[in-house]
Amino acid sequence: MTKEQQLVFYYQLLRQHSLNDSHSGNGSVRLSDSFVVTKTGACADTIQQSELVSCHFDRPLPENASLDASIHKLIYQSNSQYEAVLHAHNPYTIAITLQCDTLSPVDFEGKLYFGDLPVIQCKADQYLEVMPQRVADCLKQHPVAIVQSHGVYASAENLELAYKWLCSLEQSAKIYYLSKQV
Image 1 (cartoon, helix red, strand yellow):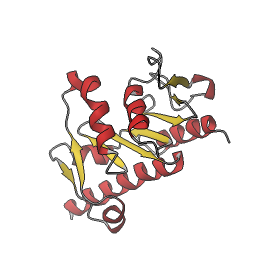
Image 2: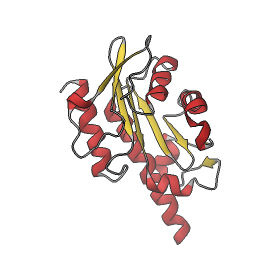
Image 3: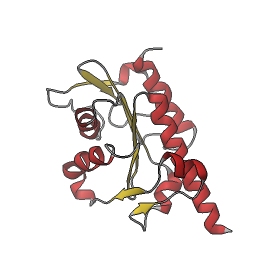
Image 4: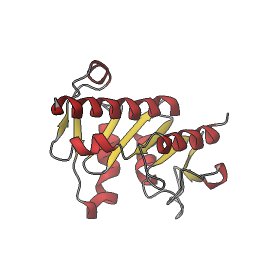
């Protein structure tokens, strides 16, 4: 499977497992001197490989690239080890971090994988100006970056690992939520 085929596959998995709605989130994968990203407004249920947008590190981003393409670009430029970025709107993670600035998982795997995670704050009208740097900086120290009331970015050496981080974090958030109900 090519990197582009893998990107379509994992982007669709995010939808199938309710980490995104039909048209939310995004993903990218690094190629040699560029990266491909999901197009803006991509439908995870029907996305095709031909809908991925090619982006070059030394050129302006294409207009049809995901709104978050600038975040993906800076993540790759700031962290040379990362080959994949996935962004999802994990519902439990978003819900439990609406009123806090740190997420501290209570389950074994969450503690092992993540430890204490900062929750990045940003006003909606400043999103495109400040979030690329804040997310890229967070991902230098953690496998995920949580943006309050918005979602989670995961970066890794491959798409499968980025997907694992998103799923593992959401599982930890569910356990955290359930532990507060008992």
